[in-house]
Length: 257
Image 1 (cartoon, helix red, strand yellow):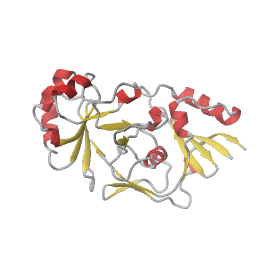
Image 2: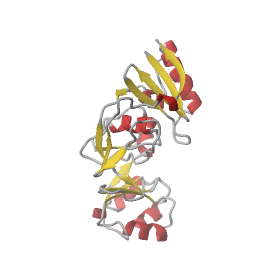
Image 3: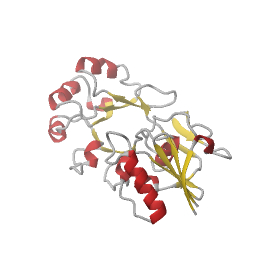
Image 4: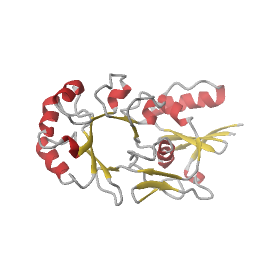
């Protein structure tokens, strides 16, 4: 039996005892929520092959079993987390430098600029730090090749990967499965990242991740998952209850027998 539920602007696929989530991120996904909903209905009722990334990923359903993976805290420390990611693209250099410096030596730092800095600004930021201060700088500028030539700072790629550009300058790959649909085979370590899925989507992504590296899944909040996801000693942790999905919080869209 196959069921399709809706929770806010997210679609939840149940195939027998396995679950997956389809939740395009507005402004970032290539498809809209309406387009994803139309395609998954065609997949379920007409056996159409999925083509949209969020639908492809959502159909990679999995059983609701316990999960425990290292977590990277986002923008604020979390008790037990040794890795911290700071988004600084919206800050000036005068704001970003002291903001980051307060955490140097206390955490394994990941700095995300979201491509919002030009080359000059990105290089100016690095003048205040050593390459060993950071695990990586994520998308520091659009001019990545030139940045890599002029600094020794490790680089992680996110948006660039989805544009199929050369990744020779990168030390890490940031993969958002809802946006990419499939997981590329790469010669560098993959760090999985969420794009504001529900707790179900977070768990779906967490199952893909290596237990040796902290993943960027610190966007969850209590919803229909029982019990809620927790963080214990730096690990995203979840042990399902007898009825791990609160169906009363969901809206049934269709059932296919």
